[in-house]
Length: 548
Image (cartoon, rainbow, N blue to C red; front, top):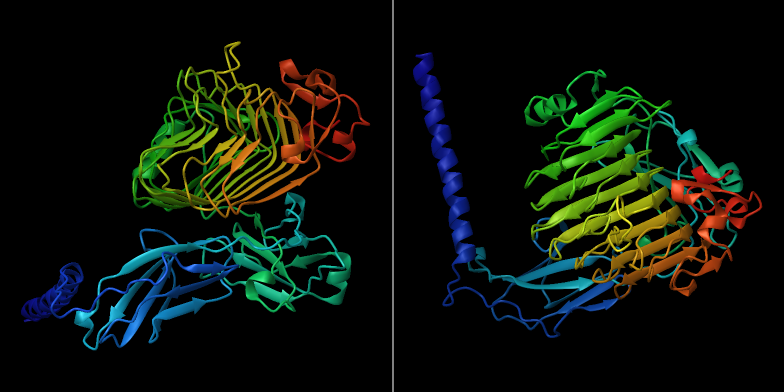
């Protein structure tokens, strides 16, 4: 009896499932098969494109007879999957105000009928809000020494013309974790820092400070900084010095029972040969701090599995190198979504054709790309090298934020005296139209990108570029190409006499000395500053690890 009862219930469930499935398929077919006799007309826009003023968008279309309303959807991607907002309006127009600046919105509108089966097809357009007007950048990068497992000290510049009265810390990767938001105390406002507790271990936070007296929502915050609290990962695997790192990582990558975010901890001074694979889930690869960095020889390049959604890839305290003629760290053609990739205290050598390359035409998204305390030395040398970051998926790349802090890029035509075999760009964003926030702070560039442009974001309108405390001791060419409506910030940049195009494009200061006179032994890879009275030392410019 129990068996018959169970089978009867399963039959009922199966019928219900089929009924729901049929309804969904019917509606899908209705969407695809337009019946011109009974379905409403598509809305037709009055103007060829929406009207944009600052961070407001207005759309107007002609009235459709018999429409009882109109549905207007705003998306953040041209596949219409990441919805920002949806509205139902009765008039043939919409005005959406005080939304994020410098953001492209993909908009679709349809006519709504009394019987929704007769709704019209969608009419599509897009609009890019203008960059935010100039505002004070007060928040400082959160120093590792100020970060604990459950608390962090957040510091900012005190500016009487730009008051700060509140702060928020929002988990960047997990919406279920609590946000911390509060007004600052009088003492905190006066001292320019606040210790924030009740944080989650090993969690990425976005920090904002605000002047809540400003009338518009997106004019209240100052600049945003991101940091991760200390603490172990959800799971840590200790890898022995003689273990097969390739076998361990590959098995975990292919085993559905192994969770995403596992940390693999390798001893300082260890050496491994690694055969990279198509990454299906995020992980963290960490060399023990102190002593000699762990070394990993890569016998190929990483790729990311098509259609993968990956929360985080992290690499820390490791020297990566190759002995290949045309190698990369990552070379990917499929489409995927990567929330963040972080490199901390890593060295990269002998990647002869490129470092991080996108190709093909599939949509690829990176929420945040972050590098800190990293060294790129003796890369390049291939007959057809790409840029260090060659982001070229035919316009289908969306890197939202990329930041490089305290890094060195040097000697980029490995194994040859031909300086044209260099790594070309620091960052080549190809033909992507997705706005990017690109930041370089405390960067040293020596004998790199000979006669080549450092930055190319020529198609991504509404982007932002920051160059602060950058030292250029290299015969590189024009520093950047940027798209329309892109904001730039240049501060305390310096160049030796080796730099080719002059300093006006980066608002820099000439040092009046060559790289050979500035550094201890640059051709041998020692970029320690000779003169302790140099403005590079007194102003802490470039990669601070080279300061005496």
